[in-house]
Structure formats: structure tokens, C-alpha cells
Length: 210
Image (tube, rainbow, N blue to C red; front, top):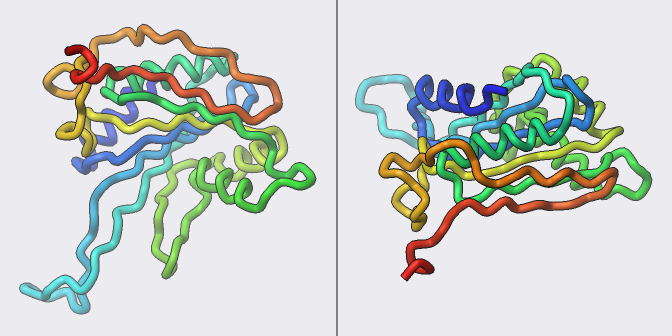
């Protein structure tokens, strides 16, 4: 599974700093994954497109939701790929959230919104600003599956290619904000049909080593 390569390619292409990364999957083998990159950058908006015009507002660059079509048979394989990407990109930790079906009786409306955002299907925010640009042709089918079967997300904040390098108090990082593979943390099997949050911790604070 080439998650790391896809992320690195996007960093090189956009040349924008990353705030965070989200990966979403439904618990069905060989279904596509949705990889969302959240950028920390702003676009200047002008009243008129003329030389020397002052910016009247700043609009956040939309997140990028990409479909990953790599084949997989077990959620532990997806877990392992997410861990490897987060480890090599220098993240302090990675959080895995196991979420139940949002179409179940009694589910809160916020769960449906979380599901939409996880699969890049939440295109508009306040003032109709576009907050996600999706290149995910199967997102609608994945969203339907997630709403009925539940889904998982993995979230982390990379140091490599991100905005966190100057704040990184982590003795495990190389000077460029990366780590030497492979990731030493073993995946934990997900629970069956219940909500659970798992935090994989990678970083070691320099203050705790003295």
C-alpha cells in the first residue's frame, strides 16, 4: 500500500505546508480508501484582478481528498500502512477511530456530518466556501457503505512537509523531520461493531530524557 508515496507526491506537487492527514476506510476488503490532506495555506482574494490591488480577504486552501485503490484483505494491513506513513513522516502520534454506522436508530446528527467529512463529501462551509476538493470517484458508494456498516479513520500531523517542525520536541526525529523505517509499533486489531479510539504514540520528548 503506497500511502507514503501518495502523500509525498502531493507535497511535491502543491508545495504547501500540511496541517494534518486523515485516512478513512470501510470494513470491507478491497474497497478504496479516502486520503485527505489538510493544508495550512491561504489564498488572497481581491475585488478586481488588477496589478497592485490589495487583498480584501484570505480564504483557506481547500483540503485534498484522494481515492487510494490499493488492494487489501484485512484492516490490519490498512492500520500498518497508516502507521508506517505517520512514523516516517515524523508524526508525534496517530489516532485511529472506529465509528459505528450513523444510520442506526438513535444516532446523533453529528455522526452523519463526521462521516461525510471523513470521505471528502462535505464540500461547503460557512459562506459557501469550498473546504474540500475531492478526486474520489467512488466516494458516494463508500459513504453509503460507511453509513450502513461503520468505518474507521486514522489521523496524524506530519512534521515532514508540515507546519510542526519548529514545535517538534522529539528525540526520535532526524533533522529533516522524518524517521528511519520500519515503524516499531505493532498494529492493534480493531474492535467489532463498537466505537473505540486507539492512540499509537511514537514521539519521545527531549525533556523526558534528561
